Length: 226
Image (tube, rainbow, N blue to C red; front, top):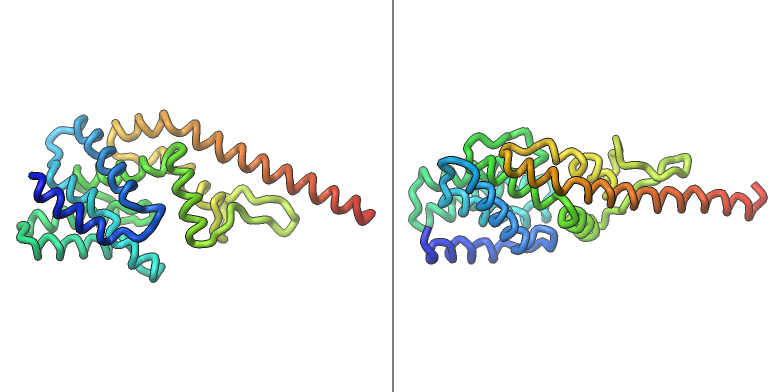
């Protein structure tokens, strides 16, 4: 891939970014993660991989406006049409499309090609460690979802088995489990090094809010002689 092609893809990506938690810096981190992983894999097509990384979240705006839509599916089609309109070969556009279509954690449409697996892993690495915590909290703020839910008995829920969205629910559903869902050895090794920070943050935050509620409820009951 030459610089002109890179800039063409980059500029299209920049025109589509409209989400602080999935902004251009997220795109660059995913690309840099992917290139690092690719160095440890044989026969990775860097042209396809680079294009897929740059364009993988271009459907985010549509999903944000209509949560019933899947940004991976919308983005894959947008990327496909953009590449065809700019003279790329259909087979190339189709491979990039498939990478983007299968990069989402919440979908059962799993990546098949090496480039798709690298994109999946690179994107998931940006949900690990402190950066993953920060991005998740940022997104929860954007969509006005709380840090945690409180159970009917007044106890703060750990987030496990919650149906109500919150940071703790997202942690238990995704952030806690993501460390065993990598396709490449390199990404798995990087994630393993990062896991401790994520666990420590969640445990500390849960302990703080949980003890606050427990002590506070007791104090309120004492106040009213209950």
